[in-house]
Length: 344
Image 1 (cartoon, rainbow, N blue to C red):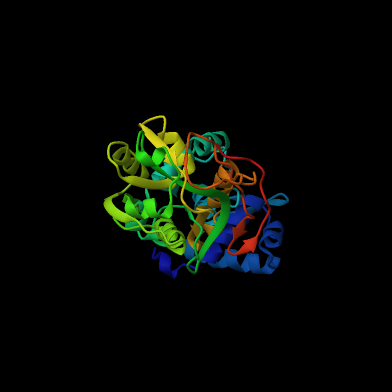
Image 2 (image 1 turned 60 degrees about the vertical axis):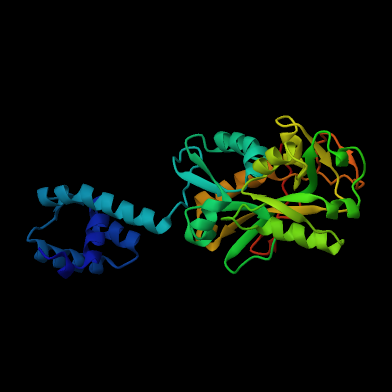
């Protein structure tokens, strides 16, 4: 039989009749009249050459042909309903779906432990995929890749993107232990005379944070004489530990790396060298229930509501936990509810 010649609405009527075992109840379920159900059954009987259902007592019973068709109709309409409704009945504790987030090595080292714990607790059977910024860029960004969300410094959003603020992140510079700058405050003149390591996390180019740092430094008459570029903050720290070069990075990353390399933290010769970090996602996943649940887990795990501590500037510091502030959540530019869980 040529299925293109079959009105598939007739199969929907048959499915309802087989489940309800009554033309009247099937009509109420389909929100049509009983006569419409009877007419549809008559047309389908003629096309299939089988009575399909016959009256028995006060109800309808299926013929052998209809009994053979019934489970296939149930499965087919279940698949169709699932495709249309998507994850409206999404169960985070039962799903085995994979969720992907892109971030630099700063968050891979500093944020991933808290995120991994929260993800395992809320979605114990799901898979967490962590991708690099390089991978995100190569895949066409959030609009054209399988990445569900990304961690990035705050920036003007392109159309179709949404963001939720997570925390304020201040930045410092690292030098090798014993570097002259580790023993005295860094001045503008000293900073401009030093040679620097630049971090290009996005396919060999400076990313959003790199451009923001350049603008903040330039506003205070500071410029970097670049001697080396590397793709990660970790590589920058390792290079700084064995040379006289200077590398800028988030304070929490610098404090983590102090335990791994002979480094010293130097405060910038300017106040307020900080960035607001956001979770960013695209319209492609905005209404997906699973992706929304994943975003809530990320926000709850990483958002820090503590107010930032005031710091002086100039001079070297040892490890010190950086406090940060969580601005109000914004999805698609709209204010949302502030969460209270802190990150580690």
